[in-house]
Image (tube, rainbow over the protein chains, first blue to last red):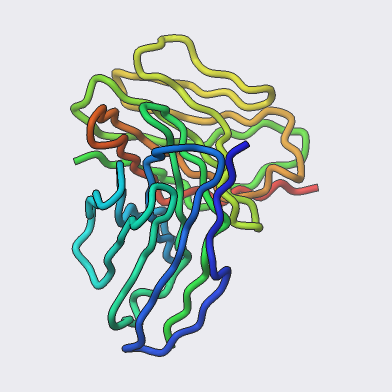
Length: 112
Length: 117
């Protein structure tokens, strides 16, 4: 069966520090991968999605970037965090033309 | 651009009663899917139900059913016989199919549902 992992589960970082959140998927090949941010009291905002290694599409210009160094690995990064980067970050995957997304457990990021 | 609107930020329902959550969307696409996701306090997103736009029949999954009105671009979720475990944030989502570049998903802002014992 397929599983999706995210780490860390929680993170507290000072403003201006770098960020690296990791997402890995098991049990499937060539998944479409997605990063979402969920701010307090708001819905999910799609940040990035990827259909293959090295292929990243950005939905919203911002302080963040994403990379996909391996087929089942998706990384969300920042060189310098802003207070507004605080939120709950969710990774999700889908396969091929499947119309379902499966979500990871999420990472709670607090920028202080 | 696609937008998904959930106009009810919070709702409550008595246990065993029925509740309907509203969702409207705006799109010029003809080939799309609609979903309801549930996010309980654990924050894990769980798919509740899905609807293919080309199907006229409303989807049903046990106590969960939808009222899909394509012309009105409305997609409401009905929860029958509400249970305490239904307490969660519910998100309506729209997906447009993109064969080569990956399916794209758009979420509403959510409705927080509380089931009262």
